[in-house]
Structures are given as structure tokens and as C-alpha cells.
Length: 140
Image 1 (tube, helix red, strand yellow):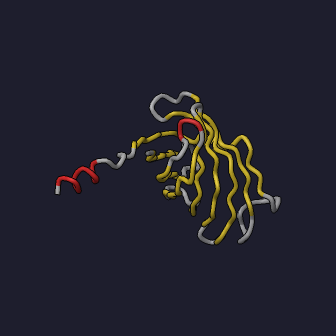
Image 2 (tube, rainbow, N blue to C red):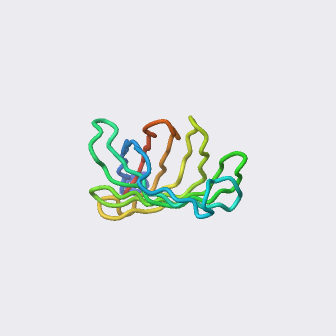
Image 3 (tube, rainbow, N blue to C red):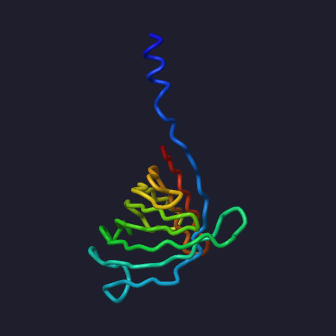
């Protein structure tokens, strides 16, 4: 039993970190079909500005693309690279762009201080103002 307890205790404990940001809107927002996300297969390419939720200091940017899966329900699949001062985080997931809806994406990787990051990110869609973005990441 002592050997088993030692083996279990020897595994590294993941480091968990939560980042709380606000998406203040797009500096680039282009629909490749030339209009809006009104048809399945339409694609949006964007760059959004991010600030820290606690004090509104500049945090970085989120750049990515989303493909409309179901225009009627505003459902998309998105790949996003979030660039912060200490590195980048990549996320992929299904998003629903209906006001007040929260979407969750998987953190698929990172660079710099976020190298090896896993976890999830949430995005609360608020087209009238700042949209909360939260990263919950684990690293070995």
C-alpha cells in the first residue's frame, strides 16, 4: 500500500489558471460571402480587441474565423487565436451568436506562458457592449 500511495503522489499536479477578459468589439470583421452570416457555409474572419475584465487595461486580441453551420440558429464552428502579452491561446468550438448565449470552446494549445495549456474558454455573446471571455486552463 505504501508503494501505491507513493506512486499516486508522484504524479505532477496540474496548475490551473483563470483569465477573465472582455471582448470590446471587432477592428476587422469581414464576411467572405460579402454580406452577413445568413447562409450555411458563410465564413466570417475577424480581429477583436480584448481588455482585462477587472480594470479594462488592454489585454490583446482575438483573431479567427467562424463558419456558419446553421444560419437559422446562428450556430457556427470557430477557430480563434488569442494573443496576450505572455503568449497565445488557441481555441476551437461551436458557437451560438444569439444575444445572451454562452458558447464554450476547447483550449487546443498555447505558446509562451501558455505552452501546453488545456482546458476551455467561454464567451457570452453581447452585441450591445463588452462580451465576457473566460479561459480556464490547466498546465502540467
